[in-house]
Length: 185
Picture (cartoon, one colour):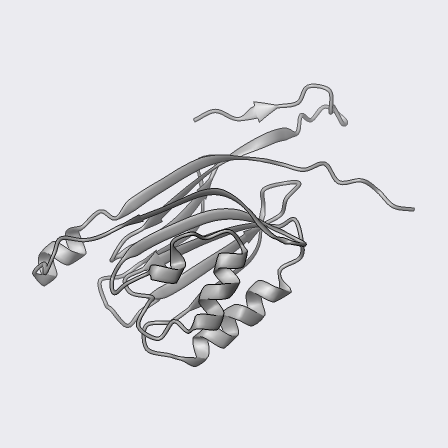
């Protein structure tokens, strides 16, 4: 694991990273987000009714620190799509947005939610199917999103329950540049 530093930004003996590494896991049993090797969010369960659906972690664009996290059970709750759209719309411009599926997220995923996630940069969510793993790392922009990375994967075709839960899912890893904040007085 490498952390990149900008040595021109010394401030009282500290050095500020200019790039962070984000690792995201999307699998039947696990959804996790790590930033520079530190676990930020981890949800694990082999119970299909616990913490399933689409998980969204929001990171500060200047520090890489978590500023928000929500999960949306779009497997069985059609109202979760409206909540997801409202949440995505409320995320401030320039925030880093990490999206991952745990277990199942497509059955009640409404078109409005697919459109909101597509606007953030997804090229996969529009065709997300049952029990498909999916993760995306993007940055919200005023005109949509700047996609850094996106991946999808599938468990075995017609797996037994033990095979399904044992499927490791996908690991999406990318480096994201941090932004320097400008002060306004």
